[in-house]
Length: 385
Image 1 (cartoon, one colour):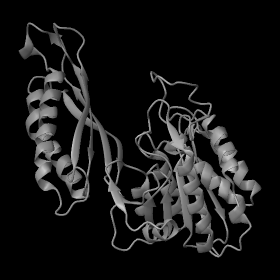
Image 2 (spheres, one colour):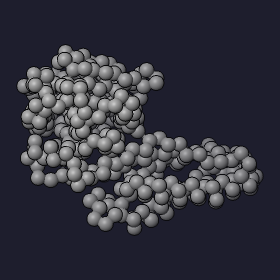
Image 3 (tube, helix red, strand yellow):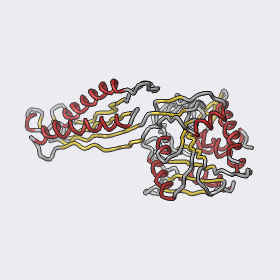
Image 4 (tube, helix red, strand yellow):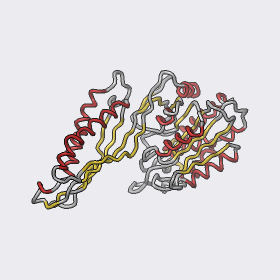
């Protein structure tokens, strides 16, 4: 049986790897691979096309369908310009909490899961247990999407996925999607004294944002009946409008960075279609009437589907049985869960730590939360034999 001390040691090691999404995660992935290999797990490392990032997929038990996946992302958000009380990549303990970047989001769960591996390895496993650790969740879930494609190609078909994002060990059976975009505007520069001879990219970007605001208001009236989300409708947020260089110069370039959090997929389709029609029939003709090479292009940063609550959900029922909880919730923040659900798995999000601590200076996880997580994972043993 794993101990809290094992988890603490491993979490210290994981926090020491500065796996900010902009940097490589290979050292951490190799470290986890070594720990799992020693337990007898069959470990595979699948690198991205740059060779600087990798997913890890490891299996204990029989090679067959229907396994249970314990999943977490290896990357963390930056610490730049954050006022930390100590080195964010050196774990410290204070007042029953472990501090460090990634402590709750989400290396605490990864440490607990891998610390349990030696125990699982001693069992006569009838159902495989898989460990899936991904890259770049914080910047578009690129690792999980690549992992899903690899699992499809290899015909690996687990039945259940437990995503250990920080939920304070609450069971989460649904969350909104997260669609992120950057829309680029190309106009024609000129002197501010002759506005009709240029195409002001910033002004067209402003008109685009106005359309986003119109759609944002419209979506309030499209909330599904009985929606459990807060707020219950699909939301749109304009994160940035960038363009221009001087008071008297017509800006030739601008960009709008924006996102939406769909409650239902056809809301996303509706927003994208409305924007496409607005650009094709209104904005672009006005731009090209002055400058034929002017235009608008939208770059897809990431389109990650939400986790749809299901009436039948083995993962939810399993975790309720293991924890004694009598219900499950939904949350507005996104995870990789929808990607696993898209593979046909039943999925739940449940892990130690509070989302309120994620991404902040002095990020931490309560040791009691880690204990609860280890207890849940220990009880899982009975479902594997």
